[in-house]
Length: 397
Image (cartoon, rainbow, N blue to C red):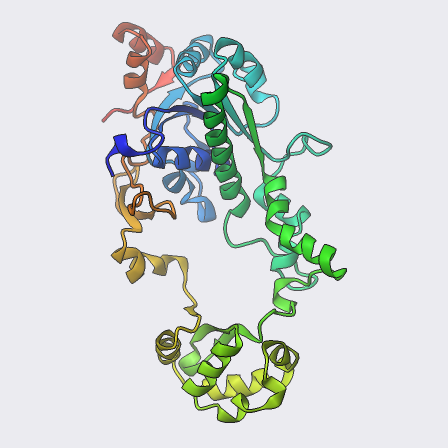
């Protein structure tokens, strides 16, 4: 897709972010066409060096961005940041409360210089009794009911990805989009806040409302009473597993016919979905036994033929070979900061039938420092002096 055709082409974002939440906000805006300038400390965003489950953070959430490395503890570094902010439509940050104020880069300070500025703060908590606390995705999953719902009773378990960080960043981007639209009407910017805890509460709100409607507490997902009778993982031939679902009376008839289960189809105790939910204790062992001799591939083929819901049990690394993702452009080529080539999932949306793609690879630390400072009015000798005094860091190989 032509960069000029993207909806936020011409919008400049300066982000002071790290980890996942803030960078996700910038990535969404960048994928949709904004010029996003990532201000990093001289040592770089810490996610550049994380191991284990954090090793993919930087390359995933920092594509389509430019990197400038500044020492914000030095006056010259702060002055350079202010020059960038003076040209920005949006500033995004996700530091601890008070950090940006100490640097003179908080909304109250910057809005005086630019009343049209939109300022997005990504925090652990929105203003209130908890807003002084340090939050992490796992912290709010535990205190916000998600870990309780994900794990077995007495065994809270975090979700298998950074759901609150990612969604919190998405809501930050949505807030920025709303503020841009409002600025068209008022001519003024505003502060936008997004938070991990409130995001998590939004995720579990369906279970809160379940209690409000029924008066009964929601059981953790592994021990819940499902709304559907057949909605489970089946262990089948050669130790394989597959998720199978039959969620309507019409699907039940198709399922029974496909697998020759005439006696179950005609059993009056299994006539409706609710009947089958009540009969799960004795019905499911029969179904598991009857399906155990089939391979996962055979079951998948039958379910697909009859438009019944099914899913292989897939590991994340297997998705690089997924035929749907590869056949629809869902994975885009990407060069990692160390030069290795890979592919990366794109935003899960289309614009005019096309997926917004990768225009810039995740930047090397300070890759665009000199370019951006030149654009901000600094001379070559000034830039060289800042580099000598270790106020900036550049890497323009």
